[in-house]
Length: 177
Image (cartoon, rainbow, N blue to C red):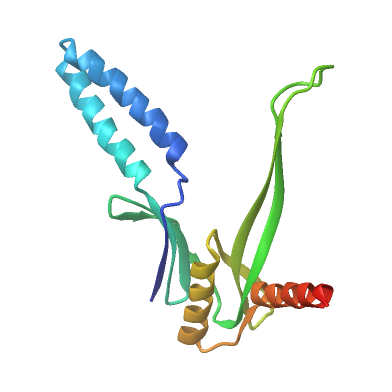
């Protein structure tokens, strides 16, 4: 069994903020005389703390895998099946995300341009079907997972990210000379 936790990624941060605001409102109503509101507000407060402390990860066992979120010790995620892997690959996925904060007008409206980078673990089965298992945010954890899957399933691994980093390093060295 493989269980790799990526740690706190903040996926539930926005929801946690909304729930904590609602809990404060309900606690306020509860302090003014409504015991039901107070209990509901306190339980929502506990839920918001769990959302702030939530972790994410990948779990694999006996031909099944799932991407999970862990809230208060309970793993939530749907199991998917996969064929026995022939190889495992680590690749980098970069995506430009942009968000405009206004409609088109004559005045300048600020925009947010962000480059989002993730490290994908992909397994290839005997039918050459590629199955992406997980998108990691942290390269070190993705690299560790790649080694772990390769070792447990005894399949070759390919690290495209390391190859690209080495290629860039060689390019920088050749430019200095």
